[in-house]
Length: 123
Image (cartoon, rainbow, N blue to C red):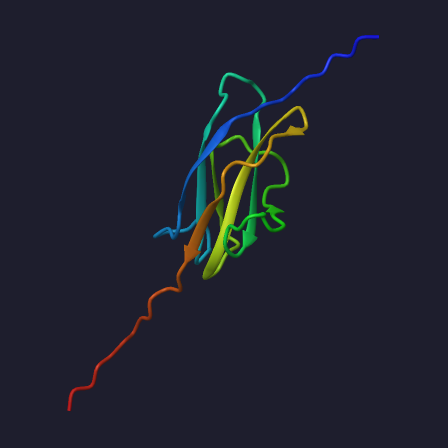
C-alpha cells in the first residue's frame, strides 16, 4: 500500500514590532503591534497565530502563549494586554489545521509613560 504524505512548508518573515504606539486602540494604555510578510501568498486559506511570552527572547524559547483564539488573516496583530516590561513574540502560519514552525522572534520593550504635571518652584 502506498501512502501519500502532504508536507506543509510555510515560509514567513517577522518584520517588525512597534515598541510603543502613540495611540493604542480602545482604552489600552500600552500596546505592541507585530507585523510580518506572507511567505506564500499564493495559497488560499492561510491563517496566522501570534504567540507571546513575558521576558526576553532566549534560546531555547520559553513557553509562549497563543494570543488569538482562531487563526487570523491580516499580516499584523496588535496586543493590548501588555504593560511596561519586555515581551517576546513569534508567529506561525496555519493551513487546514496544520501549523508551521515558529517564525523568527522579535522583542518589544515597553517603557512606562512619562510623568506629567511636573511643576517647579523657584524661590
